[in-house]
Image (tube, rainbow, N blue to C red; front, side, top):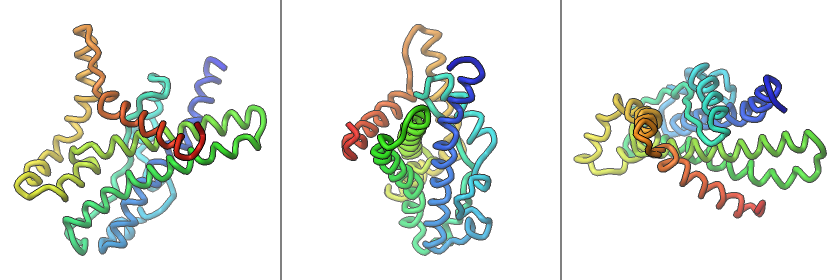
Length: 230
């Protein structure tokens, strides 16, 4: 299938996995924060599986789809509307900040395992529908693993950065926390600018693949092996 129809088919394969991945990720942050004493997200209606409450038109829809199409499904970068969390309202702010931050990536990891296990249902389907479901499940596994690995990079404001700030001694946590405002600039530079400079110099400086793609591929293989798909 080629042309515009091919593009629509590709989008249909990736759209649902992306929406579910970011919705469950953000809802998990809000739910854990709520259970640990901060009801900010709950009061704003963000502890929900309604994707409309979490999606950002540019970051959740347009940017990931463009990158996935351009890279053949091997590269994805995007963001949802961050769930508001008042860390000072948590019962044990440093400990609970770590738990709230981990909730999103752990949820994505669980979704990846469930999607991989659901491959065992595809033999009961036939034809084009079977292929479409299998492609959706494959996309769901990959997307959720990518989100898990990417968000666990130890750079604020990513979840991994908040985990690091919560676990490190204060003498190290404080300067790391101050990186939060520049965090996305650092990430965007590593993902887009560094490879562009490398291409200009005739070098392959694919930071995204080194930091995210390689561990994500290893995790994907492990999950498929664990659930008995391969």
